[in-house]
Structures are given as C-alpha cells and as structure tokens.
Amino acid sequence: LFKNDIVFEDAAHTAQIAAYNEAEREQYKESRMAYWDAQGVIDAAVIEGTEKGLQQGLQQGLQQGLQQGLQQGLQQGLQQGMEIGKAEGLQEGEKQAKLTIAKNCKAMGMVMANIIALTGLSEEEIANVM
Image (cartoon, rainbow, N blue to C red; front, side):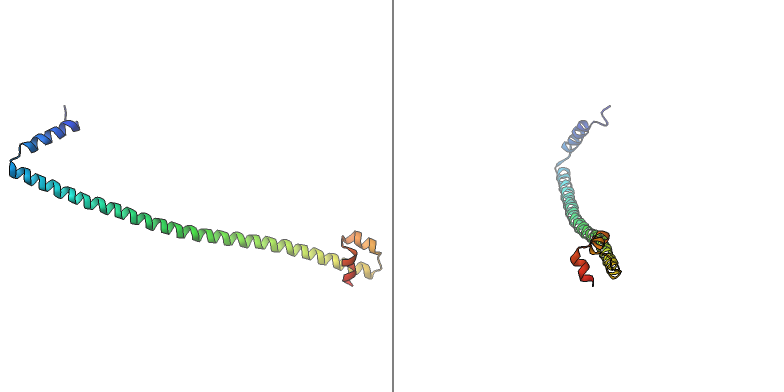
C-alpha cells in the first residue's frame, strides 16, 4: 500500500538505522561520509568539466563565427567590387564611344550644336577630342 511513498520509505530507513548497535551506526556513518565525499568529487568534476567544455565551445564557436564572417565579408566585398568595376567600366566605355562618335562627326564637318545634341557631351569635351 505504501511501497511508492517516499515519506514512508524514509521513515522505514530511519527506523532501520535506529535499530543498529553502536558499531553498526559508526560503520553506517563512515559509509555515508565516504559516499558524500565521493559524490562531492564527482559533482566537482562534473562542474569543472562543464566549465571547461563551455569555455572550449565558446572559443571554437567564436573562431568558427569569425572565420565565417571573414569569408562572407570577403565574398560580399568581391561582389560589390565587381559590380562597381563593371558599372564604372560601362560608364567609361559609353564615354569613349561618345567621344569617338563626336570625333567622327567633327571630321565629317557636322555642326557643333548637332554633335552636342547627338552625344550629350559638352563643347569643351568635344573640343578636347581633336
């Protein structure tokens, strides 16, 4: 009826210990002290192991995070650099094409106002072509 009740189990255990003679009680006391000493050593080892594991895990996580961050930053930087370079290259190519057109138009005797309207270049830019 009371087999699974911890209160009655504790009471039965206490009654059993009370029935011990002096030598048995001393032996029981020493065995309990040895048990708690061992348990203390185990608990300390678990705590120390957990702390060391946490420190190692944090260090490894930090190193991995830093490495991944550097790789992502490098990739993003390269991508942005390529996009900027491509855009600048296109702009420079368009500018060169306009200058070539202006030079050819000037060589054909086209009026300056028409060259400006056709290319979008300034009169100074067109004058520097020749």
